[in-house]
Image (cartoon, rainbow over all chains, first blue to last red; front, side):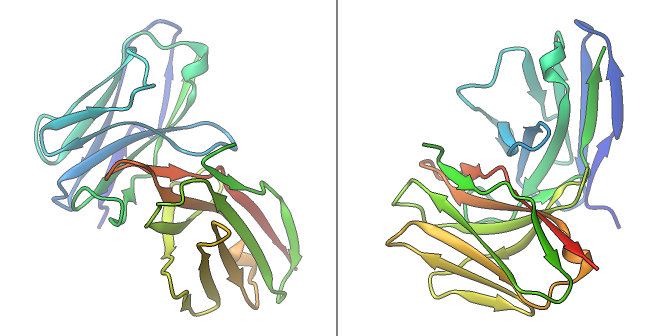
Length: 114
Length: 110
């Protein structure tokens, strides 16, 4: 029944230790997004894929990378997590690109950096 | 000025009351507007899109005021289950970018 799945739901990592968050979808949507959301703040778009085309937001640090090996899966890699990267990471999908599209979110992965 | 601004609240409202909150946006060319609901430590979920003519879905009414560049959300006969953060979302300057507000926290009290 789940449509956008994120694993793990909680991730603890050490300062500077690479970490990968995963997202999968059963909706067969073309677009997948990664957002970062800190407490009481708006979700901040990091990047998105339209099919295999990667689109990085201008202010997304190089420390954040993404991979989309196929339609269903998308990964967020944080190469050297800092304390400031502790946040909720939300994956979302939409059928097509375009701002009129509804975005469907996964439950998020809460990242803690020690 | 932020591109999308919301009163963070919290709005503390008794059950059964009507509550309304606004969201202002800076891009006069924006065409797409949404309200999302986010429960504590959960993901955002679409509550409703906002159309130029205004729209209603049960107890929820959304309106757009282009002249003053704000959208509003009205909740009638509020329920305890309406307690959540309500996020305003407006399209940005590119054809894929959505700008999210930080949300208005609503607490419905028995």
